[in-house]
Length: 176
Image (cartoon, rainbow, N blue to C red; front, top):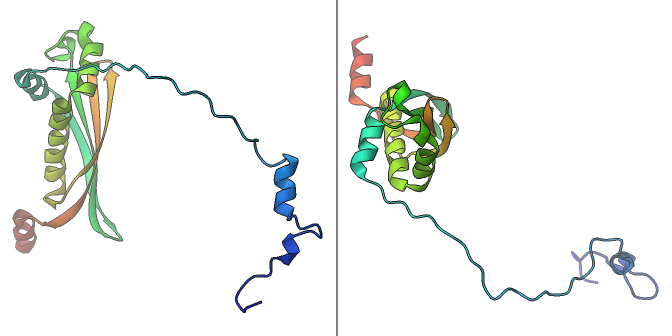
């Protein structure tokens, strides 16, 4: 036998069947074969389409309650901004634009309409830029949309590399 090849003779019995074969043949190793079943001719699914008006989203998000937190951390790949922004679309009881009875409808609309989610991410990006006080690169965002006792809340978690220090940060550090 050439050098570098493992010796496999120990895995075979005198009858020529390996120990692997005996385990599989005994049925002790996993489920047995299953017969193929007939596939259905087709399937049906429904899809909900949403048509929204940009001005309505603008009104909702202008009155939104925004809370943010975040900071820059030094990682192995460089400086990275990590932050979280919460956007609350409040009901009229809490100073918002829509009725409390429309909360579930608004939740489904925000989940279905990409324009609403993009508006929330843009708010989170602006908040991240303000908190970082430095230029940040491409942003990775993760959204969670849920009902809140005061309305509909969109939580956005942000992660972005810090590209460079901003001009205001450098000039402020020189004055000290």
